[in-house]
Amino acid sequence: MDLEKEKIKKAGEIINKMANGINPIKGTPIDADCFLQDPRIIRCLFFVQQVLNDAVERPANVALGKPAKFIITDEEKSNVRFPEGNIGVNQFARCINSVIDLNRSKKITGVEINKQLKKMGILSEELLPDGKKRAIVNNDSYKYGIVTEKRNYNGNEYDMVCFNETGKKFLLDELEKILEWEKDS
Image (cartoon, rainbow, N blue to C red; front, top):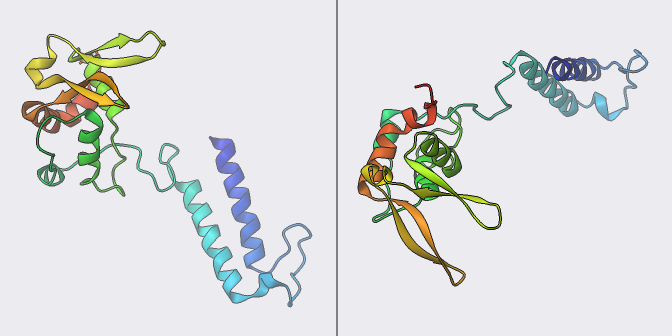
C-alpha cells in the first residue's frame, strides 16, 4: 500500500506544478497561451491535487468514498419496514440498506448474513450436484424464525430459506452481533 501512496503523492506533486504554471517535465514556465493557464483549468488542477493529498492522508483501510464497516443506529433500525409475510435474506438486506446512511456505513448483503448464520449454526449448507453451495435450514433454524418456503423461478420449484415475523425481528435486533460473531465468541 505504501507504493500506492507514493504514486498518489507523486501525481499530486505533478498536478501542483501544472496548477502553478510549471511544466512538470522540463521545470520551465508553461506558455501563457497554453490551455493549462486558463483559470478554470487551474482551479480544477488544484482541486485534483487536494483530492490526491486527502487520499495520501486517509488511513489505508478506508476506500475513497466508501465506508469500510457496516453501521446501523437504533434510529435507523426503528425506520426499517419489512414487507408482509415471509421474506428472503436478500429482501431483508435491501430493507436494511434503504435506511442506513451510506456515507457512514457500507451496505449489507444477504450473502454476508447467511455466512454468519452458518458460522453460528443457525443455518446449514448443502452441496448441489453442480458443485455450488446453498444455505438450508436445520433443526435450530426454526427457533429463530427461519423457515423454508416453496418458490418457483422460471418454472423450476425450489425451497427458499425465509424469515417469518420472528425471524425478521431476530435478525434486526441481533444484526450487529450476528455480523461480528466469530467461532471463539
